[in-house]
Length: 224
Image (cartoon, rainbow, N blue to C red; front, top):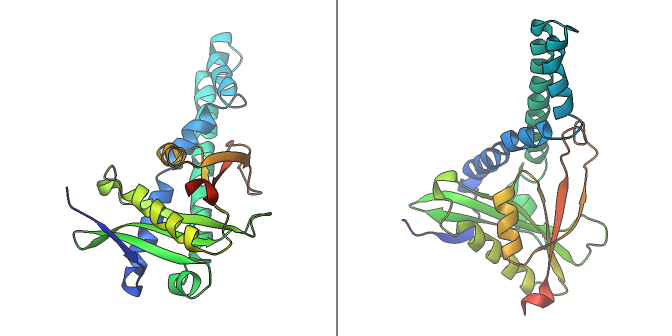
């Protein structure tokens, strides 16, 4: 097992940092799709369509085509949702990482390096959420799949939390994640983050897929 260390982002990390974000985000498509299939407004419909041929209401071919179309649409919706999110971030904070995170007050970006390669990222930025004027948001946490299970994600989180603790007036670290990110949610909760509420983003397909955003908060005074 190779050692790792965490350092500030530098310009030569640009492409790999963006690629880590892409791979770490897109991998949740399958779980989001499976979650959508299990929803009570979806699976009874699929079952009913499979039963209809036995009742001589529709042909077996028609039934299979209908099920295939619905399943295919759900997969496409999940894929498109993540792809649109990646595209949005590439035109926002990840367009110019140095300018966004290293040249603005209250922001920072770190990478984890192991064996001479960048294997993880995390960022901090002022919270954009209502009531979060004294909060910092933990963002862009991602670890290369081959290097997971080594404590890198926790170390990156602690680095960001330590940064927040040093910020005068900062009262909490907040973050958003999704139901599909099960391992990340378990880690956050073990580190003391508490789930405060959930919501849907005003984007296409989010309610159809039951794609809830989970909002977590870690109060800084509790760390002292």
